[in-house]
Length: 229
Image 1 (cartoon, helix red, strand yellow):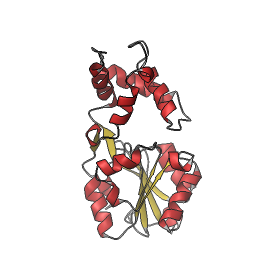
Image 2 (cartoon, rainbow, N blue to C red):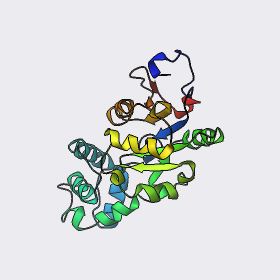
Image 3 (tube, rainbow, N blue to C red):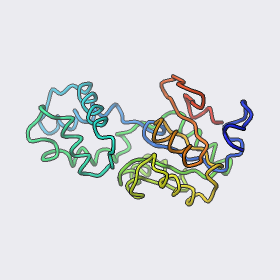
């Protein structure tokens, strides 16, 4: 049964045999924010008085300026340097970048959204295979372990391992093979319209777009993972 032929009030899990998840913005977010973490680590290295809100704005601008971001360590160093441009010399890539980079593998750098463990536990109790499909670097594997989320997932598909990011179909195809379930029987959940919603649909998945700000921009959006239950 395709998404278009499902009854309008059918459960999102009707006909579903596996569920896949994005990570950033879907399962977790930085805490208290990227800017706060950048400012804290910079202060430990003697760069004081930085405004976390300004660093957040700088980070977002630098992120948007790299649409083909491949999550390599070198790309992260360049992005961090742009976030701090004009604020410190030498730039972070030649001073405290290594400390900052490693900090994001620690559990206390991240907040797990309140609905995540409940929903993952319920899905596992229904014997549904679960997987991660994420645009991330090699820090994701230890991070999921540190957050105690890894045991929920049968497979973790990461762009740095596959060689291409979402929305490329190959990364979704890897999940199909790993789960051993037809793409039409997999529900993908993520917060990025292009990478998650469009990418998964083009790969033949069923999908819902997670809008945690509560703004439902179109049919097929949810504001909490609880809604799939």
